[in-house]
Every structure is written in C-alpha cells, then in structure tokens.
Image 1: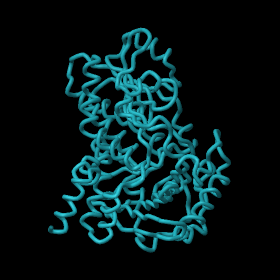
Image 2: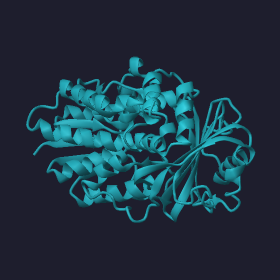
Image 3: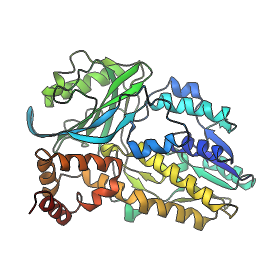
Image 4: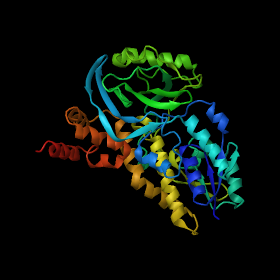
Amino acid sequence: MRKILIVGAGQAGLQLALGLRAEGYEVTLMSARTPEEIRTGWPTSTQAMFDLSLNTERAYGLNHWEDQAPPIHGLRPQLSVEKGRLALAFNAPLERPAQSTDQRIKMAHWLEAAEERGIEVIYNAVTTQDLDAITQLGRYDLTVVAAGKGDLVAMFDRDPARSPYTEPQRGLAVAYVHGLEPDPEWPEPHVGFHALPGLGELFVIPALTHTGPCDILFWEAIPGGPLDRWAGHTGRMVPEEHLEITLELIREHLPWVAARAANVRLTDDKATLHGRYTPTVRQPVGHLPGGGRVLGLADVVIANDPITGQGSNTAAKAANHYLRAVLARGDQPFDEQWMTDTFEAFWTAHGQAVTGWTNAMLQPLPPHVQQLLGASTQNEEIARRFAAGFNDPNDLLNWFVDPEKAAAYLAEVNGA
C-alpha cells in the first residue's frame, strides 16, 4: 500500500486525505490545530462553493451540511457611481445552488472523520526543518504540502510570469452576522456583490455557522483608500469594533444595504477576520535542504485574491485533480517530473482561467466588461452565463475577459 503524507488540514489537504483513504491509500495528515481548536477558533474564509466544487465533496460523502447551509441561488451584482446612487443592478441566477459552510464547522468535522477512517493524524505545526527530517526517513512515497500560510510556503518559488502583482491589491475584512434582513429585490439567499469603483467592494454571503444560518459581510478595500479602515491593525481587532467599522462603511456608501442591517449582531465572540496578502502563483515543487521534493497544493501554489470567491473552489478542484493523478500513477514513482506535470495539468484545466479572471477583476472594469454587465440588466441569458462563470471560470475565456469575444457574444445574443 502506497504511503502519502499531507501537511495542512484545510479544504484541500483534508479533502485529498479523505479521498485517498477512501481509495485504499495509507495516509498521514499533519495539522497545526486540533478539531476543538478549529471549532472554537476564528473564521478563516468566506468559502462560497459552487456546484462543480461541491460535487468533488459529494463524490466521497463529505457534504454533511447539504440540508443545513442556505442554498445560494445566484449573485446580484450592483455598481455604485457615487455615494448612495446605484448605477447598475441585476440578478444572475445559478443553475444549481452554491453553499457556504463555516470552515470552523467543516474542517473540525472532517478532521475527526479522518481519524475515524484510519488516517494517522499528527497534531503539530511543521517547519521546513521538520519536513526535511521527515522526508529523509524515506517513509512516504509522496509528500504534499497544503498549508498555505507560514514557513513552508517559502519553499515554493514565486512564478513571476504568472504573478503580476508584488503587493496586496485589497485589504480584507470579514464579519459573520445574524439579523440582516433579506434583500427586497431578491429575497431568496444570494451573494450580493456591491462594487464601489475606485474604493473596493462589499460582498454579502449567506452561510452556515455554529449558531445556524447567517450572513457574511465581507469588505474588500483598495489599499490606502477610504474603505481601508482595518489598515494598521496587525493583530486581532476587538470583534465589536470590527463590526462597527463594517456597518459605518455600509451606512456611508450603501444605504440600501444599511436599511437591512439595523438589527445586525455578530454570530459569536470570534466572528471576524481581517488581513491582506499578495496574489501569487508559485512553482509546484518545493526543494528541501536534504534533497527531498514535495508537491504544493491549492493556496500554496495558487493564492488568488478572494474577489471572485474562488479560493475554496480552487482548493476543492485541486484536491480532486491531484487525487485522480495519484490514482492514475499506479506503482510508478512520484518524481519531480510527475509533480510538475500534475500541477501544469491543473493549471491548464482550471488555474489559468481563474487566476487570469481574478487578477483582471482587481483592476478598474474595462469598457467591454461594463458593457456586458449593462447588457445583463436587460438580458437574463447573459446574467445566467455570468453566474455560471463562478461555477466554471473556463467559460469566461470564451466571452467575458476578451473585448473581441465579448463583442461577438453580444452581437450573437442580440441577433446582429
């Protein structure tokens, strides 16, 4: 039986570990936190996951919250041209609902399931030196690093050709809340996307947390701008102070959202998250001092800004892709060429499209995108195709990101 070590117990690491174990592999998983520490800790993401990504969980019976998480029926993009004035809004329905389950619930449960299913779980933060010593023992046929933060990421060199940014493009601030009233323009659960050109964005995401269904208020602020109120807070901000800033900005810039937020309160005493990072694509193979080679997974090698809501989706799809690649490898060695080929195949199948789209959305919207969004207000077919791009970003390459393809698509839709 082939033995595989996975370092990191997030969406990608745990999903890969559980999938490999179900396929008969001997798996060791290293986690920096216990299930209880995860469950009682701070949130780590907003994790709105679309149908294709959810299907990778369903394939191995990992979709435990299907009947509890609010079904996200689509997206409602809204564009403001100045404070309090809405320039554009439309509903973009999804063919199948998305879901957002607080990773404090999901990862704690999956980690407990990993132990129950015979995965050896080692609770210990891992350094490069630790991993070097482990790999030199030769116990494992393959080592995968899925811990997207900390010391281990430095093993993977930045890929400058695929990483156009050298500094953070947004300041990120998340608050899990109860008490937000439904949007009267679309009362069913949906992701509200409120764009403030030159300032940033607010996302309102229906989710499931410890205390039941909730909403996530997620500001993305252009660094140094008026929305970047969390800048300079390097540690944890008092959650109530965090929420008050969130609501102040909503009252100032988005009065139609403020009208729904009169009774908003935090879901728990650890319901906030803020920070920033530079979007980066890294080389897939990490080289250890002792000569060992390890394969990077998900955020370790593709860390996109969350503006397009693709982080957990990319992680789930990457875990599924790596799983299939391991199964197809049979008894052949997991050498460096195989590692590189496995990542490059994923980059071609998914990473390239989602990274290009996400990086483009961090810039001012070009005229052809503004035209497409404007056309979506009058044509539900365009709106639905836009929503479908969040499920499968590859389709956006066919009509959304390129001006000539956008013009051709609009002409086709309009019968020109």
